[in-house]
Length: 70
Image (cartoon, rainbow, N blue to C red; front, side):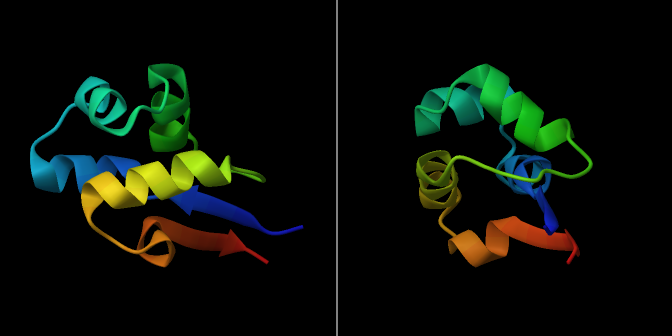
């Protein structure tokens, strides 16, 4: 199974937002946003959370995901 990394931190930094602000704006729990921002790789993500994050960053979901291993 492949592993991915979410570019939450990068997009938050571009907007000048803290992870707490990302959580508040997206409706994704802070613990989830923090995990996605700090984890070097993830095996799974919540698709609904991914969609919400992409929406607030105004990007496509593909732009938010980086494939680390296949």
